[in-house]
Amino acid sequence: MGERRGRRLLRGLGAGVVGTLALTALEPLRDALLGHRAPYAVHHIATRGARRWLGVRLRHRAAWRWGLALRWVYGPALGLLHAWLRPALPRGAGPRGLALGGGVWLFEQLSFPLLGVTAPPRTWSRAEHGLLALQTVLFGLVTESVAQFE
Image: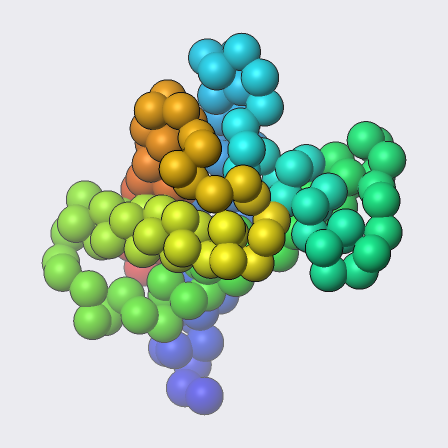
């Protein structure tokens, strides 16, 4: 792996960490606006995933910890993937950030229900759909904003 590519991937990892931090900071506001935890909150994903895939019932505190652990692996991994795909994306922080956010939104809309870690999206409220779009776009824009610095 070339030194330039290695730096780009390392920058992508760091950008994913910052994007994940922004998403984590947004979560309490999202839940306050909804008046409850979103169906795609990390706590729910960990609870449903552990039950479905491992046959384990997680207590509230364990689900919260596992959910955060999943987020802190998933977000930086998305930053790495973004750094790898970034040269093929449209130029500019806005378009690249929106492409990342939109890609994450589509992936989560399709994969989470198929994996059984969320309820089907047809059961979600408009606000829940809108706030998922907002949080994935926020992640994309923040991650790209950090990744663009050479």
